[in-house]
Amino acid sequence: MLDFLIKGARVIDGNLTDSYIGDIGIEKDRIITKDLDNSTSKEIIDGNNKIICPGFIDVHSHDDFRVVNDKRILHNLCQGITTMIVGNCGFGVSPIISAKEQMSSLYQVSKLANEWKNFGEYFDMLDNYPTSINVGALIGHHTIRRDALSIIDKNYPSEEELNKMVNLVEEGMESGCLGFSTGLVYEPGRNSKTEEIIELTKAIKKYNGIYVSHMRNEAEGLFHSIRETANIGLSADVKVEISHLKCVGKSNWGNSVKALSMIDEYSKKGLDIHADQYPYTARSTMLKALLINGTFNNDPNSPMGKSDSNEVLLCSVPGDKSLEGKTLEDIQHVYDLPTEETVKKLISEVSDKILVAAFGMEENDVRNIMQHPKVMIGTDGIDVGSKPHPRAWGTYPRLLDEYVNNQKILSFEKAINKMTKLPAQKFNIKQRGEIKHNYFADLVIFDPENIKDNSTFTNPKKTPDGIEYIFVNGKKSMMNNNETKVFSGRTIKNT
Ligand SMILES: [Zn+2]
Image 1 (cartoon, rainbow, N blue to C red):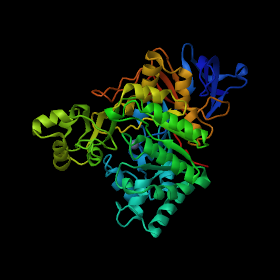
Image 2: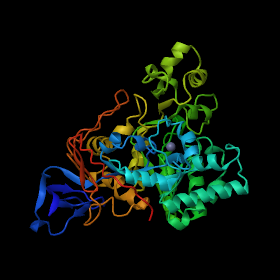
Image 3: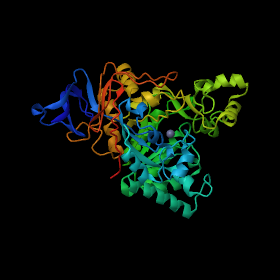
Image 4: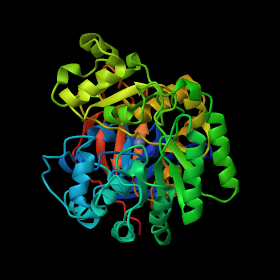
């Protein structure tokens, strides 16, 4: 007997084939598509005028530590995310001491209920205390560099230090990590040279791991960065994912066309290369990272691009919540200082852990990148402070509402492929990402006419409209924005 039978829904199975009207069954943790005419079910769901599709896979999460203390992980679950991959931008969870030091630039990590020593223990903990969604992980470059190097920001590790980092990468892959990530604008990874990254990336090859990179430069040096990333993949002979592909800073607008053609060229050469994207024209990062990368000084070249003070919103300000939601320009008026001096004063006198959202991309580039067949979706969400970038709560419904329904630049089939099968294939997530007989029953049922993200820059912590059911491993995890708190998520390991 089935647990659920969804009748007469428009089925979008994650492939790029046309949708069809059909029935989908769920039995235990699996999808059933065969012999449904003769099946009985404990519960029948009317799928009329609804789309049923695989659960969304967020390839770019930063909830590594958050998920340990908050197993609901509502900002992800509510948008239909059933699997998230943590460990992005070089921020990993192991080894724990350096992970805590590194992650503390993103959010508070002091109040950890449980601790782990390495990836094996991290996965065990998530298996023993399951969360609402599935979790896979990448090994973070900053974290292992912090652990292995005597002076973490030097350019060249000693042979012994490099070996130690290689061992940590191998240990992570042995424990089930999906790959290795870098964040080459952040400390301490930004000090490393390409050769170091190649040596570390070689260690993931025998595990069919993926190299994932927040590249060294997303502004004027974008093309050079794509070349560096591709060369790392070619030299180590591994597949490559460019994180949150974008063109930041006005002088860099329009460069998406060439960036995407470079991806096509490297693909033709045989490199397995993709990118991910969040569907917004504002980025979000640490204010300190923008400062050290020259966003606010007079140098026209900044690896993180330029943003004017009225384009920078304070998302999270530990120690002074009253500043959250204000722009840098607002604060500049109070301090009566130039922009860069205002930023320095904020960091030294208020907090060095301020997170901001910074506009600086062009909608046309966002659309170009989104339509490319090798681009998938990831949130890059950091749900801290009172005004987090809305991508933490709204990425997936926004893609469906704004870019499928309103702008009509993607079909539902194409959009859903970018959220499901494409990431599952790329990150080696088996038996998920498609509606297929006997695949894991991670499923989303939504109303295509009423799907809508409600998360905005002024009021970000809002659940979306239009998502009626979310199943994780066959368990009904959310129904019309109500959590069932069954916590049926599992760890996703590279086996
Ligand atoms: Zn990043």
